[in-house]
Amino acid sequence: MTMGFTYIIDETIRFFREWTGGVEGFLVSRSFEVAGFKLSSGEAEFFYFVYSIVLVVVMFSRFLLHSKLGRAFTSIRDSDTAAEVSGVNLLLYKVLAFAISSFIASLAGGLMAITIGTISPEDFNIMLSINYLVMLVVGGMGSVYGAVIGAGFIVFLPEGITALRDAFLPPGTDVAVVQYLVYGLIILVFIVFEPYGIYGRWLVIKAYFKRFPFNDRRVGRVAWIRRWR
Image 1: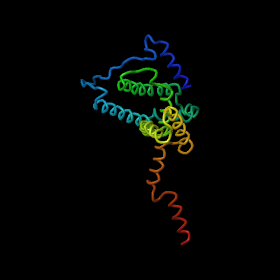
Image 2: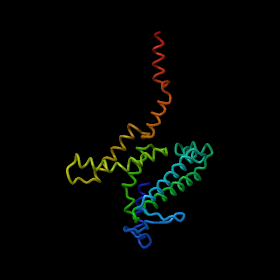
Image 3: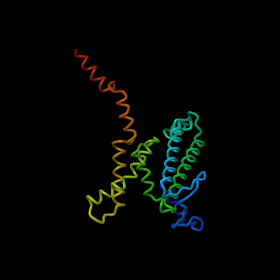
């Protein structure tokens, strides 16, 4: 349904081209003012501004995840029926989740438009949706830090794919085809072998060393040794 909705919005924008600009889209100013300071997307101050917003959004997401509202979102994600039986208003919290996520997505889209100086339906194709899916699967679904890790991974992945194509594939190979193949393999490998993503594996390693030397394996080994004394 999400993929279908993407195509519906795309066709709607193309149909109402008098207001949306159609396939060509429209130009966006690459400079703006914030609290009297003029920022331009080509300057270092703009990137500091963007990463400041990223930091605020991450902190807000962490706070939201551990709040009453976040616990309601988590319960709905795990089971609609169990959440409703527990007294969670499904309609209210689903609308709130949609509104909050839409606000964050629109903020990111606005910063993207300022960065590239234009906005059009061609910037939001099916490959972008696949990128977001890879971000969540690789980083770790259901965690804020997992999304950040996945975003960092997906930024450098195209460069690695290009280097892979240049090193091992015949000249002239379409990099888009290689991207689809590599992205599909990454999703498959992580779903099968690492379903909780990189951040989930980090939590396992962190818990292991936190209990060390009193983790389960060492405790069992010590008990076996003492048994023969």
